[in-house]
Image (cartoon, rainbow, N blue to C red; front, side, top):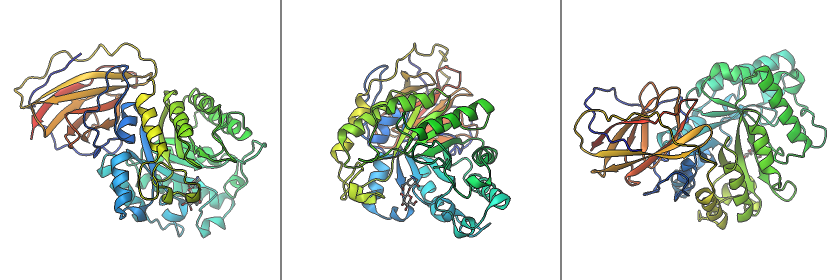
Amino acid sequence: MIERCHRDTRPRSRPRLHAALAVAAVGLLAAAGATVLPGAASAGTTLGASAAERGRYFGAAVAANKLSDNTYVTILNREFNSVTPENEMKIDATEPQQGQFTFANADRIVSHARSRGMSVRGHTLAWHSQQPGWMQNMSGSALRQAMLNHVTQVATHFRGQVVAWDVVNEAFADGSSGARRDSNLQRTGNDWIEAAFRAARAADPGAKLCYNDYNTDDWSHAKTQAVYAMVRDFKQRGVPIDCVGLQSHFNSGSPYPGNYRTTLSSFAALGVDVQITELDIAGASPTTYRNVVNDCLAVARCTGITVWGIRDSDSWRASDTPLLFDNAGNRKPAYDAVLAALNNGTPPPTTPPPTTGPTTPPPGGGSCTATLRDGTRWGDRFNSEVTVSGATNWTVVVAVTPPQKVSATWNGTPSWDSSGNVMTMRSNGSGNVFGFTTMANGNWSRPQVYSCTAS
Ligand code: 9MR
């Protein structure tokens, strides 16, 4: 199905970045010519572009003090379309003194990411670790109130800028008990986790709210089962939870489990998204990296992967050389394996393309032509690709129908009108084919191309 469009003659307000959208754009990627035909393998040339073509993001943990490192930033901007601040949003960083909030370093990362069309994962609002001294010394109802105030203040500060929050981090004990981890927060009462989620929802209703933990990758482990039971209980009782983060720090003591895909799909079956939030693999086995990517691609609600750092030297476990780039910033074999898996993985089964899209192009003459084609379709979302002819530098305006939401874009720089439904995509040197993923939210109508303007 093809839509042709021409110059927009209607007045329109100056588009601006729309805060609440989960846009994982690939603004500066050099993935020229990356196209997706229905059911075909994709041909992205970077991690972010290729993941976006599969309706997913590929992110990295980022440290504010490395944003002046040219090699680091070059890789970040080229390869990734999602960012998680590694330490800058933690409690000790954002509220070092009670009631005094400092956001400068986190804001720098958020600004760097969003100005380049990358989405941001927030990490983390409530955690037993990296608490400032004042909080470590608190207990009881005073601590509960301080924790809730922290969640509210931080989530409010970043409202509309963070697509997903690790609301609570690492609240379960290791080993076979399946119990909650003992901590000052746990001792305020077993309901502290749901209280944190409710406070986060109230502060930023547009953000996906995640529970995040490590050693929850093996489906047979007691800790995995305990988190699963909590999420199931939350869903049954209406506690606002949208996603589960599996940190996935793999090494010989905590290896990639053969049942990882079962874990991902089992959580997803509860009605939450699953995100791989802190991936690193000691030794960076290409096979294991490929397995992780394929497992995520096999689960429709596995919405993205974040690696915990860029170069090995950036890793919290640098001596394990667990990442995708070596200390000099060169791509490692694991990188090639990940990119190939993203490009070659079989898309989930597709159903017939949407049939309710517009058939009449908007009126007006045209300075270029934009042609929209249907891409891969999943159970909850679908891709579209737009081919522009007649211009090298172009601006194309596309609209989706509420409650649809664009969740990822590639090969262009997007901006948004205030409704969030109208996307203005500008060429960014990545060629004349751009794409985007639309969350259907029950409406499968085809996005409309309104205009194509040469500039
Ligand atoms: O990578 C982070 C490192 O720089 C910090 O020193 C450390 C302090 O706790 O936290 C690391 O990140 C952790 C993340 O926040 C939660 N999961 C485990 C990560 C690795 O320790």
